[in-house]
Structure formats: structure tokens, C-alpha cells
Amino acid sequence: MRAAHLFAGVMLSALITGVVPAAAQSSGATGCQAARPLGVARTIEVDAARGPRFGHQQYKDLNVLNDREVILTFDDGPLRPYTRPVLDALDAHCTRATFFMVGRMAAADPEMVKEVARRGHTVANHTWSHRNLRTANAGAQRQEIELGVSMVRRTAGVPISPFFRFPYLSDPQGAQQYLAGRNIAMFSIEVDSNDYRTKDPQIVHRNVMNQLVAQGKGIILFHDIQPSTAGALRRLLDDLAAQKFKVVHVVSKSPVVTVPEFDAMAEKELAKRKTVVASQPLAPRAMTWPVGSPTPPTTRVAAPIGAARPLAPLPAMPAPAVTQPLPPQTAAPEPTLAPAPIERPRGRGDEASWQSRVFDNY
Image (cartoon, rainbow, N blue to C red; front, side):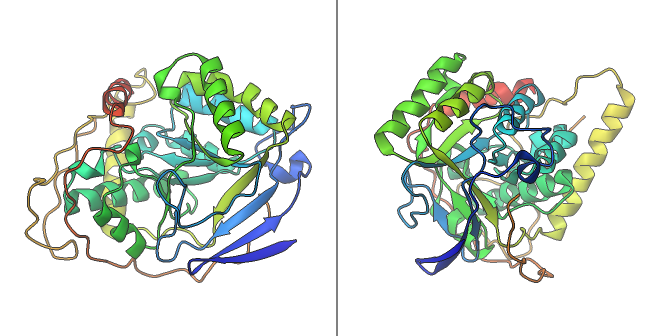
């Protein structure tokens, strides 16, 4: 059954599919191993035109979930030791999630990006380097967004969704306006696993279930670079099924359109990585990525984003049915992005240190 809803001028198509056999749910799974698999209750197809915003922690625009429905989302990956167990837990329940990937993490392990897409999950963007965009001017914000889009799209090998989540949930108004002009939807959260605060899977499990019991539904935030989430997810999904929660999968009506100049930059970065890997065949899977990339000054912006100006140098680097997509676009729009004020992240300001440590190590 298909239902169409008009929310604040944004059309969402919802396919009510129920829980179907594993073969129809996941091309990457051999079967639902869970005794009571969650499956996918329904799929919401999002028209990302004009940048709709989801997630009531920050945005009250849209209410797309019914009682006891959840959307599973994972940020910051991929990181193979933890992303793969997350994928296996999802496969065991023949269910689907959305992965907001960091561009440089994708560049470090392109095959893992492809595996996430191959297993039927939604792949989306979480900037190039996980920079807090409130600390960046307009040019740096654009570079973080667009290079992230181009790298994740290039490493996935297939079209990706025009979905974006701000690092630290730090969403300056100018960056929101830019994303809306690029027809990219923004996702906040409603349930926070706080998995970065603990290595104990039981604490992650308790955090999520307590919030769901209190709220009744929500977009859940996990990080697939965290061992606590990798360890907690299978039993957590078991409990969601036992308590009759349902998973909603979010997909896009049409894929994101990349910007050619950033596609070229992504290709150059991948070429550098191939050179490093070829010269060091026994090196670890991922290179070490510098946390802070040189960017334009953050105080004043002399020209709008559409004007010709040099970008800062990059850091040196050693399926339920979906309606027919819109006709492909031939060029990405170039909206004007207002300078972003320097402000502290809201509610997650202590994350910078742990993120820096993680990205330093991988």
C-alpha cells in the first residue's frame, strides 16, 4: 500500500511493505538468523528538493514516524573492525539503516563503502573530515560538504542519497541554506545511543531502550566506529523486535548530484592513496588522516561562495521498491552561502576530543 503525505511543501512517498523474506530484503545476507527478524516495516522515499529537515532534537518541521517506529542511523564510518559487525547484525534481522560517512574514512577503505551499499543500506554524507562547521567560513563549509559528497559517491561506486548530517549536530544557518540550495536533506536525531561515551555494549543498549520507552519512536544515532555499538547492536535489535518496534528505511527519490571540481579532487586523493598502498603492501588498511585540514580564515569572507576564489589546499595523504527517479541533472546548482558565525556546538561540545583521537588513529 502506498501513502503520500505533504509536509510543509515536501512530498514523502511511503511504501507499506511489512516484513518480507530475507531474500527480498538483503542481497548481502544469506538469511534472517534472528528468531524474530525486524525486517523493514515500510520505506519512506524522500524528495530532497529544497533541503527538508528531519529529527526533532533540532528540527520540528516534519513528523514522519508512527508510534513504535525507528530509523537506524550510523555516523563517522566506515571503520572495518566495527562497521562489518554492524552490517552482520543488521543482516541477521534482514533490516536496513542509513550510514552517514566521513569522506576521508571512505577514502581509507573504499571496499567497505561498497559493501555497505551492496548490502542494501542508504549511503549518505557526513562531511570530508568531520569538522565542526560552526568553526568554518563559507568556503571551508562548502569544501567539507562537497568533497565529502564526491568522495563517498566515488568510493561507493553507485549513486548515493542526497542526505546529510552535521558533525556534532552543529548546524550553522548558512550551511543549512547551502544544503537546501543543493537539494540535500538534513537529518538530526531523536534518540542518542551515546556510544562514544562508553566501551560497554550494555550501557549503549540501556541508553537506547530507555529513550525509546520514554519517547515511543525516533531516529536513533549510533557510530559504526565505536566498539560499544558493534557489541550492542545484535541484542538491541532482538529487543526492538521483542517489544514490537518497527524499522523504517529512508531512501531518496533521486541521487545526489556531485560537483565536477570536487570529483576531480576526490580522484586525486584516491590516486595518492593507491600510490601509498602500492609502496607499502604490508601497511595497515587505512592511512592516518590529519584531523585539521588547512582552510580559509574563519573571520571574514571577501567573496560569496559562487565567486571565483582558490580553495584551501587539502591535507597531504601518504530493497523495497522505489518509484522511478527523477531525470538526472546535468549540473549542480551554485547557491550563495552566507558566512557562518563562530558558535559552540549545541549539546555535544565534548565530542571533539574523542573524534580527534579516533581519526588520528585511523
